[in-house]
Amino acid sequence: MKFLSIKTLCFAMCSLSFISNTFADQIDVTKRTILKPSETIQLNLDDILLIDVRTQKEWDDGHIKGATHLPLKDFKNKLSEVAPDHNQAIVVYCSQGGRAIAATKYMNNLGYRAVPVVNGGYLLMLSAGHQNSK
Image (cartoon, rainbow, N blue to C red; front, side):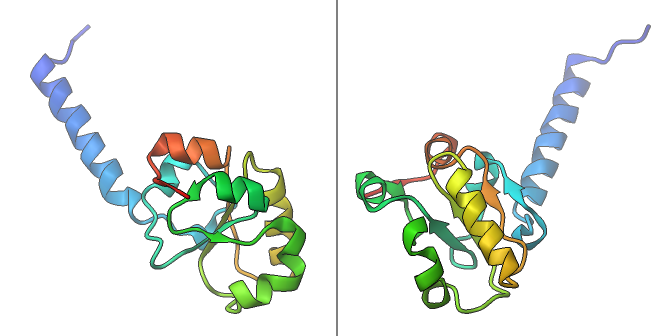
C-alpha cells in the first residue's frame, strides 16, 4: 500500500479548500430550496433579498444584518410591497425553519422563483458568522 507524503496531502487539502471557496460565491439561490447556514454567509445581500419572517419581538431581540423584516402574520398582506419582483433572488429565514417553509410555499404558489429556506434558522446563521443587528 502506498501512502501520500505529508507535503502532498497538505497540498491536496489546500487545493480543495481553495476550489470550494472559489465556487462558494456562485450559489444560485433561485435553483435551491434549502441553504445551509454556512452557505448564507457567502451571499451578497446587495443582490439578494433576505426576509426574516419571525415575530416583532424576535426581530427586536436581534436579527441578521441586512435582512428585511416581514412577519409571517403580515406576509400575505405585505409581500407585494417588500418583494414586488417575482424574479428577484430571495432567501427566507425564521428561528428554526417552519415559518420560513410556510412563507416560501406561499411565494412559490404566487409564481416567485424558487425561494430557499435557511436550514436551522437565525441562531445557526449567527453561529455561521452573520452579524447580529438590533
